[in-house]
Image (tube, rainbow, N blue to C red; front, side, top):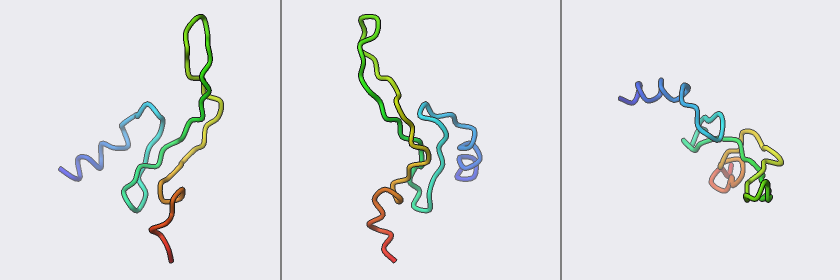
Length: 66
């Protein structure tokens, strides 16, 4: 079962974009910076920037003290 899941993960296309896992099994995904705008009478989120490959370990890093 574990091997089947590991083989299926590269084929999954999450809505946030490509995803992979770090050494701590935390998801590494892009982060989108958005702004709320009124367009055609509707409030929508507009992507204004994208930060690729954000990992929890790289962001927090408190458990990775060497």
